[in-house]
Length: 298
Picture 1 (spheres, rainbow, N blue to C red):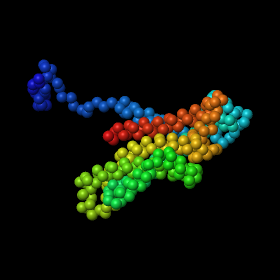
Picture 2 (picture 1 turned 45 degrees about the horizontal axis):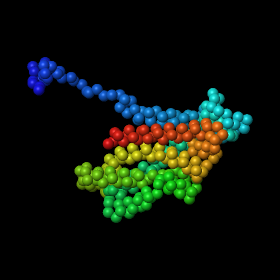
Picture 3 (picture 1 turned 180 degrees about the vertical axis):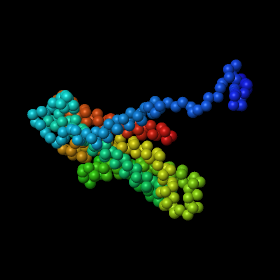
């Protein structure tokens, strides 16, 4: 039981609880540092920062990934070749660094392009409704009936396996995720009062949809984009591993794993392990970032 005690110097009453006077403590409540509150986000950003640094500056400090040296084939990891050499004597570390620029860029481009296109379609579908929504949702259902990897595989086989075609194919596979997500957000946003105010102000339906509703519906889409970037890196590497996506001699992580997989049997484990590990770390970094952003959004 608590009772009011004597007044404080500033005239306010202090609370007495079981004989103890609890003073009023001014100031803000203590908050844990960011690395304590969001450790996964920090880990993901650190890993991603290292990859970006490798992608931007790495190629200027490592050897040309296309240079072969038959006299030094299958050399294990050492101070001269950190990741060893492959069957052609090429430096695995140099190839992995050059591949970082390609794979990380591809993952981010696929995520952003899928988000932009999918969000635009989703806001039109959700805001206007009616037959527009019905047609777009049925087409989205058709696309989503195929697993993303299988759809990307079919599209790459149909349009060709150049880098731009791989980006287009994988982007198409992930666009429906953003359409569904944005549409759901828009269905809730369009019922709010600020939308009615924008209409009364004389804005056209398209302006209301894209200028007012869409920006307020994009939070979950940014979270999804971080996750899709990681999935896209895995998908592109998987296509290359199967020989359908990016092809040798391009320095790409999936290509390197495909070329190094047979070497594991004969004991040259490093040719596949290191590029495979870089794929895992890159995908993990984006997943950590997306998961922590999603927890903040909820």
